[in-house]
Length: 133
Image: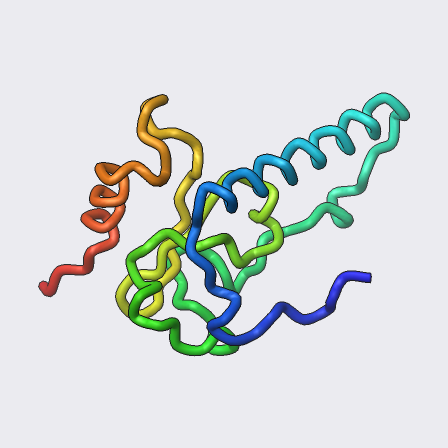
């Protein structure tokens, strides 16, 4: 049985690594196989039963208080996805100033820049940087 409440505390915040990406790809393949099985058996799922993204973990919103203050080493770095809806999709998050959530695609950008490429990491830091007005 799945837990009803999400895990709490800053210990759930983990760096996004190549092994994290492999795990996401594995989950994605399993989900695709399940969908193929449903199509073959002509089983349809109502829209109400489909999983939905958590409204408090939307991109652009601050990190909920239940996660606490993240350690400074986890700010502006790619982290594993917290929202169960996105965990089987190829995404990762970055926490910016004020613990604001930014969500990025983990696919290779321009077909050659992986999420771990230093150029892409610098581009993400420039993108989420909040400069004073």
